[in-house]
Structure formats: structure tokens, C-alpha cells
Image 1 (tube, rainbow, N blue to C red):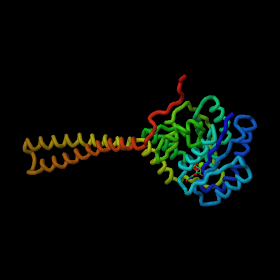
Image 2: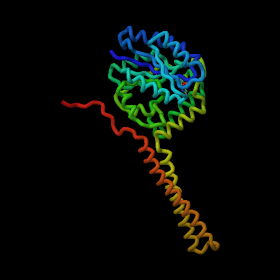
Image 3: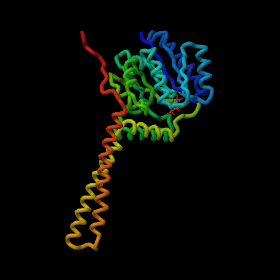
Image 4: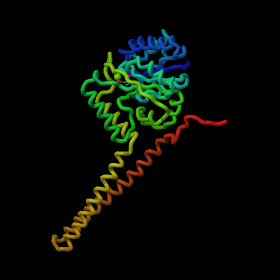
Amino acid sequence: MKTLYIVIPCYNEEEVIDETTKRIKIKINQLIESGKITNDSRILYVDDGSKDKTWEKISTIHDHDEKFIGVKLTRNRGHQNALLAGLMTAKQYADIIISMDADLQDDINAIDAFIDAYYSGSDIVYGVRKKREKDSFFKRFTAEMFYKFMLMMGVDLVYNHADYRLMSKRALDDLEQFGEVNLFLRGLVPLVGYKSSIVYYERNERFAGESKYPLKKMLAFAFEGITSFSIKPIRLILLVSVIMFTISMIIIAYSVYRYLIGATVSGWAFLNISIWLVAGIQTLLLGIVGEYVGKIYNETKHRPRFLIETILKR
Ligand code: UDP
Ligand code: MG
């Protein structure tokens, strides 16, 4: 039997945390009774520098029930960092770690399927939303655009998967080796590898409180995802520069031709060639510099070059 930790980042969630606690308590007790997880399984709340009574509530919950434990960050560091803090804490004590949101938008009944998938050999189990009927049209549309755009930009994501997932301890040990500061977990987890599987679930509405991801934060998040994972935008500079350079060459040839047949006013060819020559060379050089910047960017991430799953040795 394995020990399960459920990691829940919370930012100003005083309105939802009691209800969440109530429902998760039932779930975890069920799992323990059915013999799927050990009795030292825990729920770990991470307080991401909340400005309301979230931490006080977490402390009270912990006082009443040792199954609920908490970590408090010194200040608000954002969902991804709070989640990582929780995962890295949990993996010290657990074999299986599940991350989910505090608002219970993600159906907690999917946890059973998560754990079954783990016991069938998956180190990573992705929760994927079946439909987005419950979300507003706007949220649905922007979210779909987000995934499509990310794929276009070369970021490998599991479609419609947010941060509701199970990871084994060893997968998290590997994740820890990714040294990047700009964190986009959804993009990183697939890079860890191992056998993974998908569990589909219904996504509900937030039952209280407001989304901590308004449009502005969502856009910032998408931009973060792209710029943390892909040098495609830099490649675009190179592409543009090659096109620019080609156009320059054509216009220069044309100017020379006009000059040779004497169809120009004095100085026209010189000026025209100067402008296009300088512009063409500059953009080309910028594109080349961009390639190196892209390389430096990849090097500074210090991502592991490989991760070993098993060694056969006597
Ligand atoms: N969250 C956090 N720090 C933040 C913003 C959000 O820890 O700076 C938590 C929040 O408490 C919730 C989860 O991240 O548990 C997801 O946030 P939310 O439900 O508001 O996002 P949405 O579901 O609307 O995308
Ligand atoms: Mg939510």
C-alpha cells in the first residue's frame, strides 16, 4: 500500500476551504478504508500568501484533524510556484502525489481512477476535462485558443489538462531536476517522461469565491508558457530576416539595372542601394544573433539531458 498526499494551493480561498475540507475528508477516508492508500496519507494545503483568513482556517482545520497539514509561503508567489512548493514538500513523505485546486472545480471522484491508473503502472496521470459546458463561452473560447496557440508555438501540452494530476515520487524527483525559474508545470511534466495515462472528468463551476485567473493573468500565463518553452518566436525573426534580405537583394539588383540603362535621376541608385543594403544586412544579423540568444536561453535552463527510469545490473 502506498501513501497519498493531495496538494492544494490556496490564495484567498477562505470562502471555499471549509467545504473543500469536508468533501476531501470523505474521499480520503473512503480510500483508506478500501485499502488503496495508507493511513498516513495527508492533504497538504499551501497558503500562497493569502490576504484573507485562509491560513487561520488551515491552522484550525489542522488542529481538528491531523490528516490536514499546511505550508505557508512568505508571500504570494503565484499558483505555479505555490504548487511546486507543495509538491516538493509532499514528495518527501509520499509515494503518490495528486495536485488539485482549492475550489473543487475538478471532480474529486476522479481520484479513484487516478490511483487505479497509478497501480496499473502509470507514473503520471493527467486529469483531462471532458467538456467545458459549465464554463462561460468566453472562458471556453480563450482556453481553446490557449491550447491551440501553444501547440502552434511548439509547446507540447496535454489538451484540456490543467494542473489536476497524479505524479509518483520518482517522477517528482525528476521534475525537481528541471532548474528553471519561470515555471510552467503543464509544459514541464510531459518532459519528465515515464508511462502516463489520462483520466477524463467533468469540470464544475467554482462553488464559491472568484477565479484568481482573470483574463490579464491568463494572457500573462500563456505568454509565460510560450516564452519559457519555445524559441519559435526567435526563429520567426530569422525567417523574417531572410525574407527581408532576399527582398533587399532584388531591389538592389533592380536599382543597379535602372542605373545601368540610365533610367534614374542622379543619386537615386546610390541612395536606394544604401538603404536596402543596410536594412537587409541588419535584419539578417539580428536573425543570427537571435539564434544564439535562443541557444543561450536553452542552456541557462539547465534542464536534465536525460532521466533514467530503470537500470538492469547485477
Ligand atoms: N492560486 C494560488 N496563487 C495565486 C492564484 C491562484 O495558489 O496567485 C490557487 C487558487 O487558490 C486555486 C488555484 O490556484 O486553488 C487555481 O485558481 P483559480 O481556481 O482561481 O483558477 P481557475 O480555475 O479560474 O483557472
Ligand atoms: Mg478554479
